Length: 309
Image 1: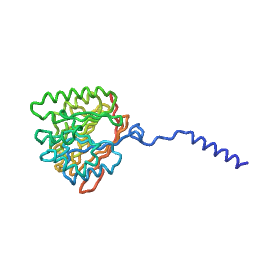
Image 2: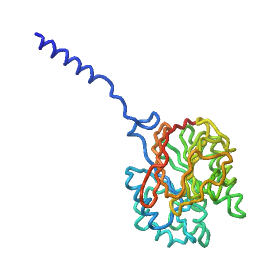
Image 3: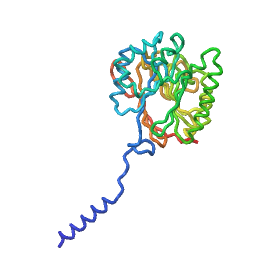
Image 4: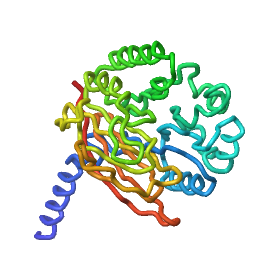
């Protein structure tokens, strides 16, 4: 009798457990793990050995849906078309289909300017303006041309880009935003920040919180959320800037000064690759990996969530 009762009780427990909802696995923010995507961020690419190590690391990561290049897609003394071919052969050409470039000052070093860049990247260059946007994983990505602010007589081109950016963001209300270009507004490394980038920040900050990726300085920097004046801002309405520039020739000079804004994390003397896992609801996690003498280590991790205005 007792055995029969025990079997009935066990059957009831099994039935009860099978009807209970299964807890979701950890995703990013409140998003489900299976709806998140992973992207990589690199910048300032040069040198076959460095390029081999960086591209190997991205491939080993697995399931990377996009690789954003924050300018200087060929960081050599001159950048005719042939230099891109030599650098990418056997390295970045293995992931060419998922590379999303933006131009840097080294990409300009051909005759006429940017001809090597535009010939190599073809439709991905988005010539002649060299800025564009796309959507992926519920996020809106904007690739901008910082060099438009450094070409004499091209003030109208820079102004047109700002107006395009304003309209582009307005057309995507509610989407979490990632913007990337070459020259950072804020930086404590050798080339410092570039105040000419403030119009980008003004437009993006007016639209809502965002992640911004830059290169130019061959270091890794992460800033806590800021407004376009460089003052601390709440995560709900600030821009978090990441400088991920050392795809080659890492800087070794350390921080220039400690005047605000100061990066929460500063790391040099290494190659760096940023990996970001993005959920459609604006949640994100990041891991920054450094390569020194062929050895890989994590130098920064974190998470957050963008809640558009």
